[in-house]
Length: 260
Image (cartoon, rainbow, N blue to C red; front, side, top):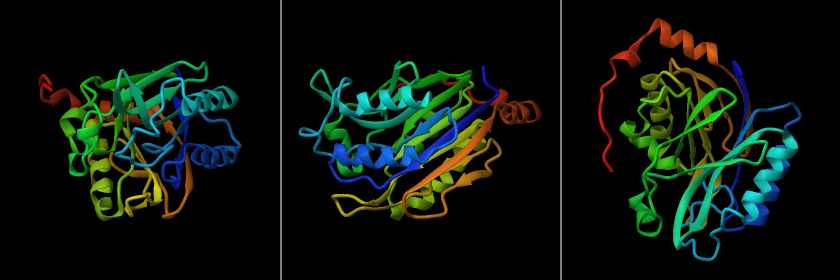
């Protein structure tokens, strides 16, 4: 068990539907990380952009992006995570993949699909909340639109980190900032949000605001640019434990059974 976790957030400009160029671009960013790290986090659909026509670019769990992630995890001796388009059993998933240094894969399929642009008509929703255990830390994995649904994010599992990877557009960036802070406060956990930058194939603009928020709702580190960026920091287990000991708000949380 580690009492601290070194993390790096990659705020990238995703190239529309070009897996090879996106991998190359992110590889260049990762090469800039000179110090040892425990976890590298990429945005939602980091290899393609937020695509609603996945037929020609969907990958498998043995595809190019997964193989590349495994190589990174091994070479850097760290975990790497981000979401991508996966085809499995004739269904398409917006899947967050978490790969450990050993090559072991864990994953979470996005529960809340963005009906506003038709994501729910193309992709299959996940139904299982995923808590990833890594180096003594419990990480709750979420994707973009999940951020708007506090019941799904509710910390009933005593997780340490709520992780949101996203393609969250500029017109709604205020909601992104506010909801990330709310999730940290109500769940007494670190909250990490990793967003992309640039303009996608649908002319939607993204301005980043990738950030890490502590259990009191204060920003530890936030990108100050609307271009590509690497955000690095260290999380401390003691900060979570101190807050939960001094402020036992989770003891009074509502009991409920989640129904799909």
